[in-house]
Figure (cartoon, rainbow, N blue to C red):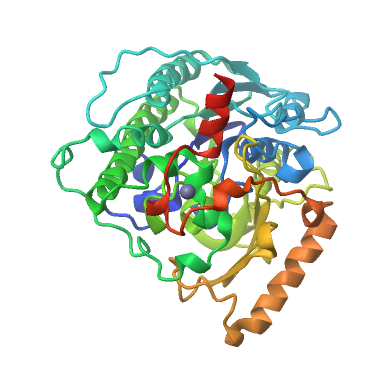
Length: 464
Ligand code: ZN
């Protein structure tokens, strides 16, 4: 059994942004080679396409509606994780692990048990067309700290989490995309096949009016096709920056002599819209680009292989415990993925779920997603709107089948699965309040028709 655990987490990395999942525009030689003989999960999902709820769920093993961390805070109170919940850090600490966390936290107390080092911002990187911000600066510091830690960590068994910010720098890029020259970035990637979806005006209102609730979407409302292609190019650039820093971490692990004793896991908290549906970054929607995330394992004891099993971030706490010989708490929703990697099981779940509440509390738009083997079903509290996509035949979610009579049976099955799941996990979603001022639903449909500030920008103006 391997002695140590190294978990590397990236912020805002979609499965569609990686070569391992078929994107040959992105160059990630370090990830590709490190996990070449490892185990790849092809269908891993976040519990929420937003940092804090996703992270709180990941490190605790509980759904966001159970942890109470359902937003990024700011104008909405986010409780620290209850002391009644045992975190991954507490579990491993009790088992004698030296638990260290480096990099971005944003965890609402769920990293309890890890020794967390605050990040620094060495602003020594000149911004070029890609406009670097704290995300990239902090990753430079984080890489240095990780290499130092691996060089000096000693012989005690360790659980080390390294939390990188990139490609999250793409959020900041949105504010500057208007200022770029047409030829600022050569050899632009093409637009995605779902750049324009014909039925956008039938999608749930929180999706249609993303431009009113999300600053980054508002910044992109007047972009032309070329600017969206620059956005995708910048996204790939931040992914490649991350990969080059991972190369330094992998080299340090090798040089430490501990590689053979260490299981390495790579994942991301959530993805990025990558210009699909003319959408940037992430918000109140559950499309593949933002909820479907990478998940890889490598190590001497990890069998090589790939699995299409549906897996969730909630499976990580039980899996890490199982890998390290630590007792798994039975009431967790997630499952141990080791039998899948060992080829003893094909699946652990019939479905996985994801949820959304609010980013900062200025629009509250609760919604839920259930992803089964073939379909994705979503339900929004606002107007009880729903979506259904046939992911086998429509992987880019171009046609919402919710009003297609030919899919009535599948729709009813998925409705029932979500209802039961909410009952089983004490999810108060059916009674949750919606809080959306009518002005954020007032312009003609279409992001291009948006004018003025977003809900959070208006709130900020009012407070200034
Ligand atoms: Zn708008």
